[in-house]
Amino acid sequence: MNRRTSLAAALLMSGVIAGAPASASAHPERPREIIASQVVKATSPHPGLNMTLLEGPTFGADGSLYFVDVVASAPAPKVLRLDTASREVSGFFTDSVGSYTSAQWSPVDGRLYLTDYQGTIRSVAADGTDPRTVFAGPVEGGPMSPDDLTFDPEGNLYVTDLTGYLDPAKEPVGRVVRIAADGSSATVLASGLAAPNGISFDRGYRGLYVSTLWENRISHLALDRSRTSVVAARTVAEVDDGPAETETDSNAVDAAGNIYQATHGEPVIRVFSRHGRPLATVRVPVADRAGLTSATNVAIRPGTKQAYVTVSGDAGGFIYSFDALAKGIRQSNGG
Image (cartoon, rainbow, N blue to C red):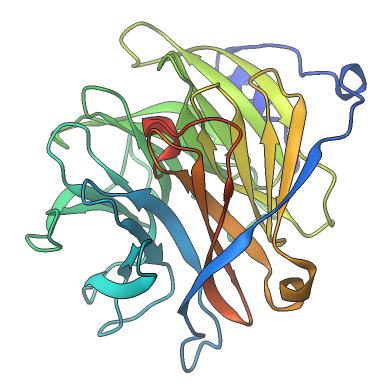
């Protein structure tokens, strides 16, 4: 198998039953176009790197939007906070070790959890203090490159492992990993995946929507009642209507079960129904597109339709907003 290996096929070989993909021809209607509005320029390209990359937007209990700058180095903030009313951006947390790729608040302890691509899950208190290592080290004998995360109601973490992404000539070795709420154990739910990135629970916490970068595909992994193993998998949508260099990044799920799929390589969010029907395409204004090359993630303020997107490119790192198709829930607030 090459780097475009089907997620369904990979799961089938691992003993998981794969369902049939959704048929694009069954849904011929054209998705509606939504133009997002710029809220604020949050970061400028970092000296020496000539780039910035924002990710992981998530609303805190104080109503502020928190997000990460993946390529920031201390003393620059690695986690930032946006007051959406005043549009003021401030530093929230930094350290000398992490390369943080996503953020989400735990439903159990109220702390902000951060995935460090170098192999660690960390958390900080609601005021940005008291950093702790939640989990570090190999999982079932293999190193982990955590990218996105989501929580079940009990506070257990479900993480996409991007191991192998930077060496696409090799066989797909990405995984989905479950980490116990207290960080005491970690198990592999799915393996042999083609660079899994986005991960979100469906509305009923019965399964996970996982997007794979190499395939531009969204799949649903149904879990058993304990949420400790995958019992079935199906392809929800093939995201193949963008430029050849684009890849499916993070995702989110709203109160109606719609899936918001972010894009690396193009400042676009694509919205699908839970059955895979294309519903909407969210774009930045035409005047902005030349300097922006990714829309990595989206958060919908819980209980409202106010959606916020992390957008980056040569022009810097920005937050954009648009009206979501349905209200935000925990599954659309970070990851």
